[in-house]
Image (cartoon, rainbow, N blue to C red; front, side):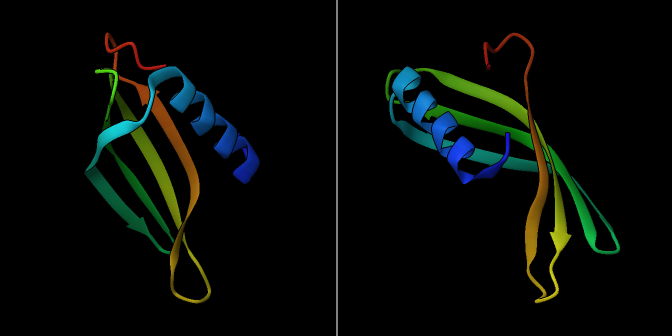
Length: 86
C-alpha cells in the first residue's frame, strides 16, 4: 500500500467493519540505529466500540531526514497468531 489515499481507504474500511476505536497502544520492543536508519519492532493493540480487540506485531524502518527529523520509510504490520487480526 502506498500513499495517503490508499491509507485513508484502509482506515475507512476498518471503521466500517469494526466501528470507532476506543483505545490503542503501541509497545516498542526493539530498536536499532544504523547511521541514518532506525529499525523498530514491537506489538500494537486496538480496542473498538463494538468490543473487538485487534492485536498485531509491527516492524518500522525510520529514515533520518536532512532537516534532522525522523520519518517512516517502511512499515509492516503482522497478525498475532490466533487473534483474528487481518
